[in-house]
Amino acid sequence: MIYLDHNATTPVRPEVREAMLPFLTHEWGNPSSSYRFGSKLKSVLETARAQVAELLGASPREILFTSCATESNNAAIHAALKADPHKRHVIASVVEHSSVLAYCRALEREGICVTLLPVDRDGLLKLADLENALSDDTAIVSLMWANNETGVLFPVTEIAELCRSRGVLFHCDAVQAAGKVAIDVRRVRADYLSLTGHKFHAPKGIGALYVRRQAPFTPFIHGGHQERGLRGGTENVALIAALGKAAELARQQLRGYDARVRPLRDALERGILDSIPGTELNGHPELRLANTTNITFHGIESEALLLLLDQEGICASSGSACLADSDEPSHVVRAMKPDTGASRQMIRLSLGIETHPRDVSTVIQATCRAVAALRS
Image 1 (tube, rainbow, N blue to C red):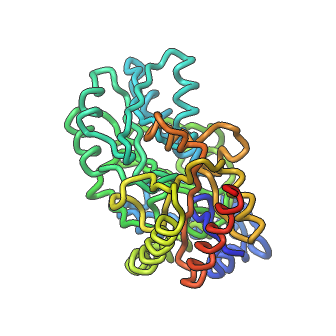
Image 2: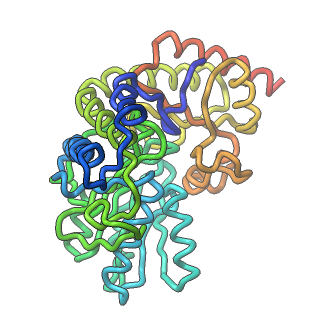
């Protein structure tokens, strides 16, 4: 198998698996217990919290464990709206992840005004559009760091400064950025920032939300006193320990990530675009993640091409895994190129640190064969 869908999920690293095993076997206590067998696990939670904080340049007390990025994204927007009920305006973009867009649609049904900012043909956002959309009624701006389908990067530093200058809270969905680009919340002054472990080699089902000191926060999930009363529910110690270890490894390997992955991505991309007529890159050629390429194959349905690649043992996708069961075309590519059929005729290839150079030539050859068969 050649796995080129790292933006959907990543394999669990052996070191991460080892970090969580004790809490699935002999250290199975409840950290909220008063006796030592359970209560000693509180130190495990705090170690993981510090590891995640270090990945982001944050303080450990600014890290809140969640079940996933969807919960983190929803919780941040919820907190901002609860902070000032008189502010009933949310700003996002048309290319946000479904966990933001679906929540925005639900909020509209409750009378909240939502503005979705457009992007250009390269998937880039204009700061002027954001500035024009901001108003005294805006509760929060929720924009992603890196797009999950194209890898295109938004100017999050400038977005954060613009929001701060207008007194508006800023939430950054950094799910695809974590482990791929350096994140420092002392420089990118977001009020909330989301991540999830399974995008950087932790298991699925564990995420985190950075909440800047002094940023308002009302619990999204009510229950016990866990997470300092900010998120109810017995802590999943095994997954939290795994997230911490994965964050530690991601921080250590970040320096070499770009140098290893970008040349392979570029070779794969050039090989496909140069070898196959009627192909087109989706997304800015430079301002994107090092591991992601999104290519349109004109005249070929995405699912047909993916099926043939799957038969050759190649894992790729036509967009977000969260919408894989939907018949809808890619909302990201459709927003970039509404006048074409590109949104139904594209695939995303996302590489990882373990992708081997020989995989590149194999995938190029397999894609050429698949396209030739579908066009014959």
